[in-house]
Amino acid sequence: MLSGRLNPDLQAQADRTRSHFCGEKVIVRGLFEFSNYCARSCLYCGLRKDNPAVRRYRIEPREIFRLAGAAAGKGFETIVLQSGDDLYYSRPAICALIKKIKDKYPDLALTLSIGERPRDDYRAFRESGADRYLLKHETINPELYRRLHPGQSLKNRLRILDYLRKIGYQVGPGSIIGLPGQTISDLADDILFFQSFQPDMIGIGPFIPQKDTPLKDHPSPPLGLILNFIALARLVTQNSHIPATTALATLGKEAGEIAALKAGANVIMVNLTPHAYQKDYLIYDNKARIGLKQARAAIKDAGRKISLARGDSLKSG
Ligand code: SAH
Image 1: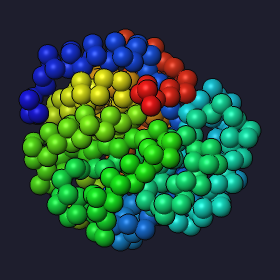
Image 2 (image 1 turned 60 degrees about the vertical axis):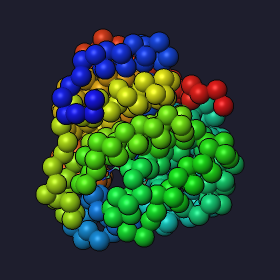
Image 3 (image 1 turned 90 degrees about the vertical axis):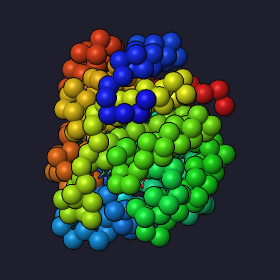
């Protein structure tokens, strides 16, 4: 079933499941990529510390606060703060930022996507008011995981996900589809992982080569494979929030996003990173820039309605 060929029956069934459990609204969340510094060397990622070709930037917490306020002013009820694994932002600095945002905008849901940190940081961020944490497990094959992530282990990644959930975050693991050496059987295991973990949110995207990384010559997978994967993830989780990701839009242009919305996805993340920085957050090449305008168009074309609502987890605890 997980072939590159589109499977219309599978997609239609996933679309019905999405409609039944998530409704017709596509939830739009605002994403800020606030730093492209990274302490890690993931083989696929353009932000890896061993890539000297990146122009590095950091947005200071004071400026992040201002940007969050602007997003809230536009009606966004969720903002996602993402970065490389950048320990320049200390625990107290991030806690202070979270508190400042949540004090001023108590109804805003705050999602962190800042990678692996000491355990106590996760707890402190949660106690400061962070609501959700995105941490893709990338691949559930431990050997493949080890090859792609020098110095990291799948076991630790999964432990962190369990811990995040235990201390009350809504949690979002996720997979990259089309990694070198990844098999259909690996992808099936990813789906089974979603079935047992029942994530609040799931990030699914194709591998896309980045020219300054060791995997620069490895091709992206066919769009059909990702759409089938999204559909299966929808079928086994029923009500998890599944975005039509930027990577998909990059691969399939607007058609990729629309197709994902029709294959089980119910969320879009729009990029609110200031333009001056967006071009330097190059996790992969030719990264699409999904703004509110593009999101609106894709949602309309998919025959759905836009919502800026918080879109909290639909899982019942
Ligand atoms: N440092 C954070 C955020 C990383 S960027 C963390 O580790 O969680 C967010 C996601 O970009 C990663 O989880 C990874 O799945 C994705 N990504 C990075 N490089 C990619 C590539 N070449 N192709 C597809 N996805 C990629």
